Image 1 (cartoon, rainbow, N blue to C red):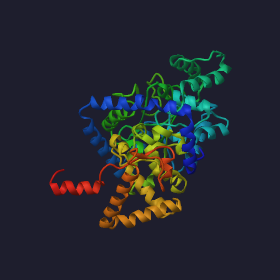
Image 2 (cartoon, rainbow, N blue to C red):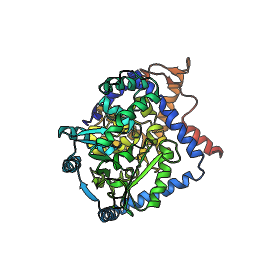
Image 3 (cartoon, rainbow, N blue to C red):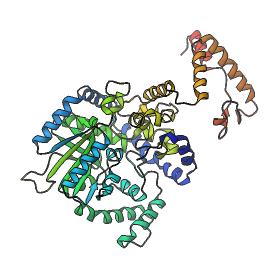
Image 4 (cartoon, rainbow, N blue to C red):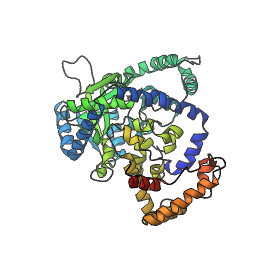
Amino acid sequence: MQPTSALFRDNVTKALLDTDLQTALSRVDKNFTARRTAAVTAMPEFEALRDDAVRIKDHVLAHLDLYLEKFEEIVRTNGGHVHWAKTPEDARRIVLDLCQAAGARTVTKGKSMIAEEIALNPYLEEHGITPVETDLGEYIIQLADEPPSHIIGPAIHKTKEQVSDLFAEHHRQYGKTQRLIEGVDLVAEAREILRPRYLAADVGITGANFLIAETGSSVIVTNEGNGDLTQQLPSTHIVIASLEKIVPTLEDASTLLRVLARSATGQQMSVYTTFSTGPKRTEDPDGPNAYHVVLLDNGRSALLGSEFQEILRCIRCGACFNHCPVYASIGGHAYGWVYSGPMGAVLTPAMIGIDQAHHLPSATPFCGRCEAVCPMRIPLPKMMRHWREQAFERKLDGVRQRWAIRAWAWLAKRPALYRRMTGLVVRYLAWRGRPLGRMDDLPFARGWTATRDFPAPQGRTFSARWAQSRKAGTP
């Protein structure tokens, strides 16, 4: 995928004017946010579970080499193979070699963001291999020739009517001439089209939510069962995952699965949780004959020990997306690369460079909701500030913005003058907005007032009120 993060502002404008997108995004709160709240409320020990999950991932990151080597050892003992890929190019080449060795013409795929990260589908197509997405959301965006817009809901930007049009256009070749409008009918037709593709596939490619060092297992969760069919029916199963997906034990995986499902979809557990441990054994009735795990670095090891290490705790639940007012307004494509939302605003600059993605860490109101709901307690706002600092130091922001920050920093270092100046500004704005209680035009803030009013300040500044309350001995 060619990044368009450098065009973030243009992407935002298009997203805000896209009425279909705005209709589709209105479902985020109902389908994700409210369900997570209900699931978390129903589990009194959820906060303690989050603390356990954080401890597990911090321990793994402190001993990542140890657990990766242990995982490789156990996978080989079980009859599987582990392949190390430093770059996306390495990962694509490894997967292609494995597919060609298996004589593959068609591969089925379970949902994998790593496959999106390395742009696997177009690469396989260039070499005469047809990839078939089997997750319903991924299948929809494959038909639309678009990247995913959400980490667990890749087609969340599509309305039902748009999906209906896509199916009518692409399923005609299978003899489907009726345009369907009901969701249950669309799902049934997709299932009917996809089912023979599972049986015809030579290779199944899946991602992994977790890799277990203790057993050499890969774990994938789905709500459709497509992951099971993708990895069990073809003769070769390839898992592509990033390094930080490793966990020490089955019990650790169980802890993370409990916070994952509740944070992602508001479920106690995903409908299907599938563990794969090597190729089919002699006594097994089915399963793949070959089992390969491709482990991708792509800059992640460079984050260890840095101010961005905590992003490697991410378990890809999407909770930060669902609670971010910016994502809820513009969707995922505006971010311009595979990962969007608050976690994407931190991870994308590390992947494609801050030069290309310096707008993303500014795509936040810093309300803190992303950190508050993150099951892994990742300090996303703090890390976005770190990227902003780097962008400022490298002069990637506009001249006016950098001078404004310099002026503010100069003033903030002089508290007495800062309080006096802000007091004067607040009194002026209160006087100016007094007739209506708001202002529809402000010098130096027309980016704000061009589309909405600016509320007139009420009372004194926060600093003044804070000082008064401390003097009075009240909180």
